[in-house]
Image (cartoon, rainbow, N blue to C red; front, side):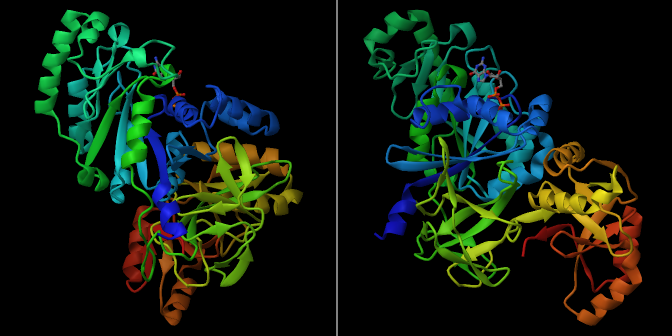
Length: 528
Ligand code: GDP
């Protein structure tokens, strides 16, 4: 096997999806802890706090109780390299999350045992389904009273439309929580509050028939458990690797992240069964992960990660080949070679300068705005990875300056913040307005805050008569020119210079479409 094949086979790149408060942050922290990436629980939150000190705008994040920034965490575990891509937590940031999910090979769904399947989980699951992303499920907060486990599986199956294969099964819950049974190995792992971090053989039994177990959990509990296990066997699906990899079945684990319980069983199963990087579609052909030449696409841009340096980092998911520090890569959109100097890898401890990176890994590329979301890098081949869309925003506001002399700064700020992908920036052909589009209303607050904090510009956002946007596609130049002339009042350029129709009403949009049947009106723009 080549180096690339070996390295690709070791990679497990995934994201956690959950409704806010289900325990994503806590579980992330515990996965890092079991992965040996951090010494002490609390570090993820600690890191957040440390960043607050360096960047004021993080105060907004804190104030609103949301996580606007996302990051990438890498740690080795049992001979594998795990890449955990954090997804932004707030509902307003769906588009960002969507793009992170295009960069992973599988997902982990966290469900609160008391709340069951929640609204945001349903949405995220729909996104995963678009690409048949394999999903594992962790049912969290078992130390509290919650729904009956069999009913929960039923809820996941009916609401999310995915079969459940329990891998661990809880013994009791809340105050009566005694542990879990591993349905594949048969082992019983007992729960000892606050002590489950270090593996203790005294808490592990070979099977439910181990005579010593009865002494620990009591005869009645054991009898109930055995009855329930029979029921579970009848009521659930056995684990089927093929179905899991096809996104049709989810292995289910029970535990309590805050108590370290059930997390390691999950992680062990995850690294054994979750998929390594798969082939990916481009405009012309499928690219296999084990191909020796480097390829990758940018799924996220973050401006000003470090306010001291005003840097902009493009996050690239490597799809094939090997990246080595300082190498040149071909930036397909511009047709130019770019030196990927000072690229970052994302070891859990901190950002580090990348030496080598392989399929499934993410690297961060510093740039000054030449790189956009959706861009492909190769070693010369002109291909573009597909499936990383920009959605039409649903809300629009006109930016209004306090100090008109700061127009240049405002334009720069809006353009740079739009590169991160959460908002989109439009310049009408016929006016000097600056229009900002977003999917969620909170975005305008975030942008106003950051404009002030990072660019020293005070701006407000006022209503503007735009209901929806469509990207214009037309291969025939003459038709396009005519269309442009006739509709100039409603046309704008987006940050990438693409032509966009801003419709004041849905009816107007419909009429415009009817009048120009040979012109395409697209609700998403695939990053070209
Ligand atoms: P996120 O919003 O999904 O990232 O959720 P967090 O990880 O921040 O957790 C939300 C709340 O649930 C926090 O107060 C956690 O301490 C708490 N929590 C997380 N895991 C558990 C658990 O296993 N049991 C209990 N009782 N609380 C938990």
